[in-house]
Length: 258
Image 1 (cartoon, rainbow, N blue to C red):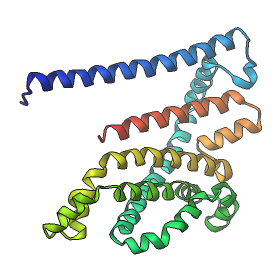
Image 2: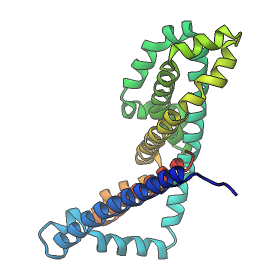
Image 3: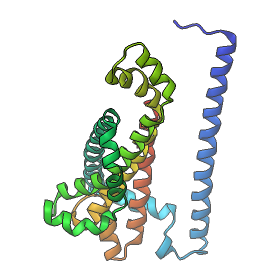
Image 4: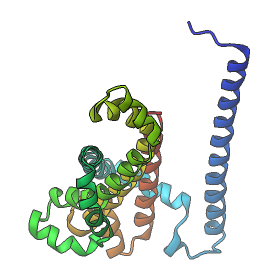
């Protein structure tokens, strides 16, 4: 059993209280937002056809759950999201490591990374459909294009920002480049990597929904497109709310890595 000093225990209690207060304020902001929205909708102070309101959303979500369609669509979107996140993060990390290990290559590739990252990926949608077909592969490829360059750029910048005197000291003890990376560069970038994971995950979700809007006949993106086509805006807003909830739960999951 671990024992802590009085000062350390007081510090841990302070951190615990801070986390509780942060959560309470986050919950209060969300509760206030939905409460005001519900009040405006119930009193017809907003156009409920265009903007809906929380109780109407809950009825829509309940009807979709009872029809057993919603979980299927959520599962499809989550599958595409997890696959695209895994590929983009692992590939982005590998390329970032190679760029750090070989500085000459990083200098050559740097402008191309900026150019590729700035490309409007939606404009490539028709080409992606032609290349990959109107299927799940197109959706994952779209998500990969949107997220991988951000992953490479952010991660490589973190690797490059390690203080040089740490590296010089390690070299003076005879460490090679790979040992310096494993013992100094990577451990000092754990928190930046976790922050990059959050950004990459959000970009992957955007890419998956964009891909589903273009080609899919299933998933939350498809439900959003279908709802807009039949002017069922309750369905559209309900799916957007579900996407926000998924994003928040995945954010909490990544936070547990710390």
